[in-house]
Length: 341
Image (cartoon, rainbow, N blue to C red; front, side):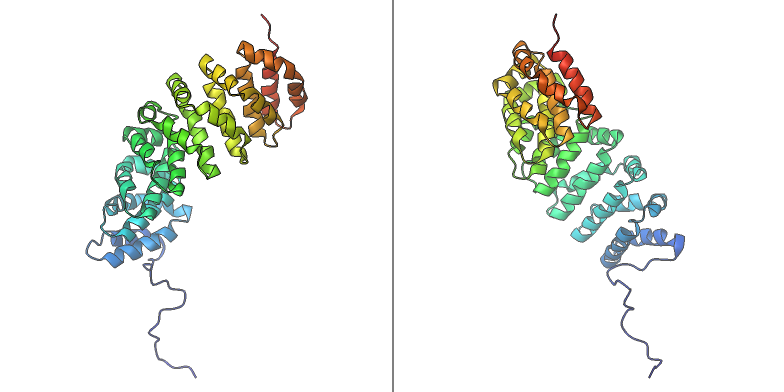
């Protein structure tokens, strides 16, 4: 029989760990005010929990920025409570997944305060800090902001002692930063660090390390440094790696390093031509494409051209490759290999 007694328990669809949302357009302003409740830790924690879920809807991102959420979160990065720092960075990461959020980061100068948490004692705090910076760096202006904040040397140093998951984020961030500036990375010993990561047990780390070696080898100074640390030999060995992304990125790195005469002869010395020829039949088009391009560069050396003249038929068979990019690269390779003065 029904009674008028009121239950002391919350309804089953209410999450006690989250702050209740106000109706409609008042939801975000109310959460923002709760984020600034300095004397009430539980209120801040519950507001952050609710904000994480609320902002997963992209339609709420712009309104959150207009309400001043970014500034409130920026203040909370220095909070003494690890849960507050963690959830604050998670919210910032969610916001950074959108272009309007990345622009807001730059306008409010949030990169520096986030970077300070690279030294946090909590793994999850550091993880979200690096992921947030990685997302911002995807924009050229964001990558420039990371470089201008002198974070590249810090990121390179962190590759030596961070967890594997965080190393992946750092390598991605450096990938974007190297597109706008390579000098800081070279001066920080990045080539040596990337080279050491080619032996990592995680194939994704190996692939990203090879990609960053390629990025760092774009300027002449990077090619020289790659030669000094002996990256060419290891890159050639990894052309037999089980992970196709590793093979593709290693071939691309070989291609860039071998632009110089020194790089060409170092590659030939370590049997790069024989190894790359085996990759012409790879099942992944990216590997075939980069292998063809690398061989094209090596054919510019007299020894390379002499060796590849006997393999022109292999290139001819690739003219009907399923990838149009590979077909174009093959045509260029044949022209370079068969060129005569």
